Image (cartoon, rainbow, N blue to C red; front, side, top):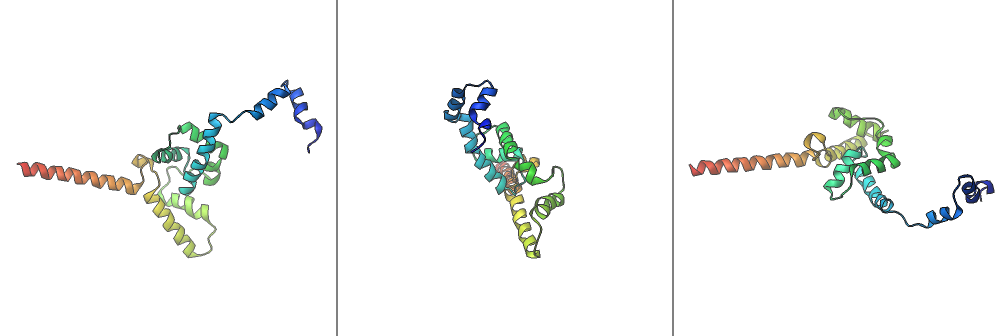
Length: 170
């Protein structure tokens, strides 16, 4: 037990708050915001960890949207701040780096020290797979590279098919 001078009653007496106000606040059910935060926090952590623990709030927000979550960007920012995971785990800003710089920052430095060459090779393969198939890139309107490429070729096939139709009508 703590010292009596640090109990609820002396604190309420110093901060002109009625003891009944304190007890009412403790008995109050969680607010809608608190409940929503409790629902979103594990999803934010999941998305963050599934993406090599390198996404900031903007990309986590985009990925949550892609997965069907209706959430405001400021909510994701606020929750990622209280957890402090994006900045703490990233160890520095990697925006604007080349692929080699991203690789070094996100794999070599973050996941090391390395015991064997095979460990580095396996981590590299995992990262390349994630980068190509799941990573959201701003330059492709927050679509993973493989998905963006597939959309491009699909669009090209449609253009070619339309051109062939026009040629056959002439």
